[in-house]
Image: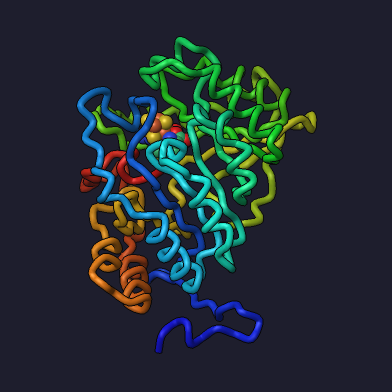
Length: 344
Ligand code: SAM
Ligand code: SF4
């Protein structure tokens, strides 16, 4: 039987549950739309001689839409576009329009470095994009350049405010925290977010850099950042955790002004409640950021595979998810791909 035989009277499909061997139900899909980027963050990309995938290897918008339609029938509810830098993919709003029209998606979100946001915020909003995460590690141009090996902080700030003016609410700012580099950014980022009413999240530096320079000592943990904030800004009150699969641990400032979250994949892994699946820009399905195995959805789609076969491929990928990423364990194997090639 084909999926299409299953349409209900209301036009929607009955949903399956995409569960792995440990009962983790997968409802969230991260789609990388490109491996290209307009900056070169050291924790993600190499500085020079980057080998990008040729255009014809990337999934087309039609292939991405097909994958999402099948994923939604399996229980996917949240879709996030990422990259590389998603806004460098030509006509991204066209893809957003297609995905926004897929019945059953409850949240359509984008993670961006913000550099092209001022130009694209209005069209993204009009196309149906609902939520934005903007990466902002630093409010100092010098530190921004040390991290990204490019200039452009002001363009990001302009992009964030342009997005707000375009109607995006609850914009979240994501900051990777790195010992020896971004300690001085903690308080200014918190104050900026409080002043302008943005949600701020600190993310621990993970071993997914292209230059293989990650060291455990560079991980600036949530506990340390909390201490700084409580000493220099305001005490923090834990927020109730409504969604157990949410990776962030959230707090409100006790004076009622602002919220802050921490994503601690290294010091406090959240693998046991992970609900995410990933699709790389060239159509490989991954069950974990740190996975060393991929399932080739592009080959299946381009060789005439059916939606049922695609569904089985996704199921198989999820079923083979390991219990935990193993970072810090003696037998940890760093994936061959770096963050920009996977999609963060
Ligand atoms: N280019 C977009 C951006 O930077 O927001 C989207 C892709 S980027 C890979 C997604 C997120 O991953 C960003 O917030 C980035 O800071 C984060 N990231 C990249 N490499 C990382 C690493 N090694 N450890 C932790 N976070 C990382
Ligand atoms: Fe580009 Fe994002 Fe990677 Fe930075 S983190 S190099 S902005 S893809």
